[in-house]
Amino acid sequence: MPRFALGPVTGLASALALALTALSGRYGYHRDELYFLAAGDRPAWGYVDQPPLTPLLARAATTLFGDSPAALRVPATLAFAASVVVVALVARELGGSRAAQVLAAGLAGVSAQPLAVGHLMSTASFDLLAWLVVCWFTLRLLRTGDGRWWLPIGLCVGAGLLNKYLVALLVVALLASVLAVGPRRVLRSPWLLAGAGAALAVAAPGLWWQAAHDWPQLTVAEGIGKEDGTGNRLLFLPEQLIYLSPLFLPVWVAGWLRLWRDPALRRARAAAVAYPLLCVLVLALGGKGYYVVPLLLVLLAAGCEPAVDRLRRRGRTWPVAAAGTAVALAVAINAVVTLPVLPRSALTVPNALNKGQGEQVGWRSLADAAARGWSAVPARERSRAVVLAQNYGEAGALDRYGPARGLPRPYSGHMSYADWGPPPDSADGPVLLVRQEDAHGIERYFTGCRQVARVDNGHGVENEEQGAAVVLCAGTARPWSRLWPSLRHYY
Image (cartoon, rainbow, N blue to C red; front, side, top):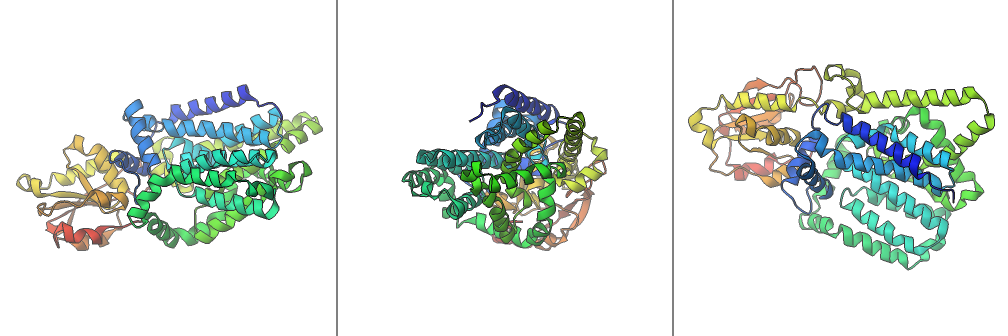
């Protein structure tokens, strides 16, 4: 095994983490982050659309570091830095020299998807790290043949299941690949059962919660597949090119070929099989293209050794300069698309490529619009009035910014917000409804509705809430307890 390039790799990861930290507070919360904050304030072993880990980390971050977007994102940035280091360790596990390890860490650290999830607090931030560690441990298992590695693999899979259930797809892909191309002896180890038991033990609280609530996560996944499945399948292939960078394509293709052809890495051939197999699984389920990014990073790590060798063999200045220019161009493009480096008013192009950029703009403006609508509610009726948000992003924004504007607690039928309601039947007064611009259908559950305000983020950013309506209704068509099941929705 080559020596690990500890100093250069950790220095690079630290520098990238500092850059992310410096940019973390430039825009505002993402809608998912607002939801995580609300969920973290209502701790549970599970939620209808996710396991408990990310909301609990959100609560811990704000408790330890403060109540701001930058503070909330500290765990995601730390996970990003750890992921960069693990990619270098994967390169080393595949025989990569110190130069290849540093190159792997650098390319991974400036890739689009790692930068995006390192900047925002999301389940994908910790999913990326969990998948990469599972891959690293699996490669060590395949190299050494020591079945005891199944135990740390199982513990890491269990932790991943506490964050997001997608890691189960990785387990299926890796096991099937090892069964197909070997080395199969590791599947006969009694430690495999120990690893499976460890994974189930760690994940048990979240799985128990899902079972006790009739597996709502499956309902959510089914809804996403029906709503977005066709679009996800059509975009899957081009997304494989852009989630790292189109300029990194030769490196990860070389990595796949190396894993498949190199006799010295025959033990790791399963990683070459696992990537296309995982792609097939995700396509069949209508999942999102970024689900397979961790295995793309494994291929990228495998391709860094031949990339370094090629540059050394040519021995000329211009190939090195060309490679450096390509990396610099990838850094510039990925930074603009994934990070808050531009003024909000200049987000038109980045927002078209990465909607997460625009979803960090305008939440205070939404709360301001809701406050204007609330002022139209007669003072004598406010004790019986309800503020209802169509989706969890709106509800999270009103949870976060509403109290300072004199707004009461918001309710919503979206995702886990539905479990935190409904309003009491005694709240039979006016309903202040905050909904997206084209979501007129929700008004059929209320009477005497009229629009009293409109959301304008003030920067011309076309996100999901730009132009959202604040509608004042005279009341509900039925008592809240009877109406609530109709208002519940998972997408």
